[in-house]
Amino acid sequence: MKAINKILLILFLIISVSVLSAQTVVNSKGYQTDFEDLSEQEKWTLNTGTLGEDCVNKWYFGKPGANRGDVGLFVSNDGLANNYTKTGVAVVATRILTIDKGDYELSFEWQAGGMSLVDGLYVCWIPMKDSVKTNSVNTSMLQKWVSTYGLDFGRDSLRLNQKSWNAISDTIHSDGGEYKLVFVWNNGVAGTYPPAVCVDNILIMELGRCGKPTNLTATPKGDAVVLSWEGTADAYDVRCCNNMTGEWI
Picture 1 (cartoon, helix red, strand yellow):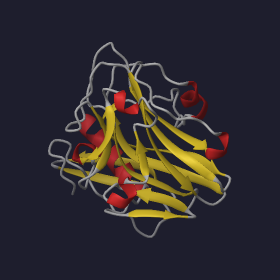
Picture 2 (picture 1 turned 120 degrees about the vertical axis):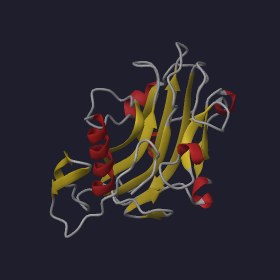
Picture 3 (picture 1 turned 90 degrees about the vertical axis):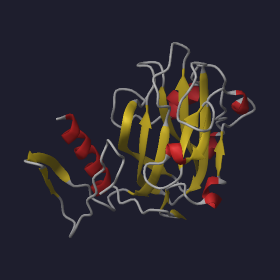
């Protein structure tokens, strides 16, 4: 049953969020990136603030953070693997964006281990006009602005924890001005439960532009799986990921 649940999760991602490979799109109607474009990477600020480089665990671009492709955004204690050290940090990665006034859906793929109720990923959408200093700190203390601007994605907590790859989405609003998209990895000193956070395939699109399918099911049938869903689109692309090998089909 766990394998079927993973198939459902991956299928929900692929069907509901049509992420284009190897592409960055920035326009007045939204934003999309898979981090494969070096010029797009340069528009992100990693490990923000004067204490950012002092953090033992820091944000990097590279293969360990990728869910498809060659590059993703990830936290590491050495820049080589998505492991982390049990030294407290709240380390920040940001991207400034300007999109038309309106309501949007923010979605992305992610995984983040961490000690339960201690470590995790936080995501914020902050108006630049609020002049919030989104600095990293080299302690486990989570800054107040994270809880003030954090997205809860319809959950009971702002913190995201899940060792396997996930897709998640939430509604955000733009007044037409500049906003800062912020990812915060926070870990304490109690221990480690890798992987550290990985983020890939971010998409911001107009709310309602791409209707999500509903009643998605996956039913075993011998060596096969029967997939079904309800939706209004003329067609859907379906891809499955082998969680043992990481191979997409």
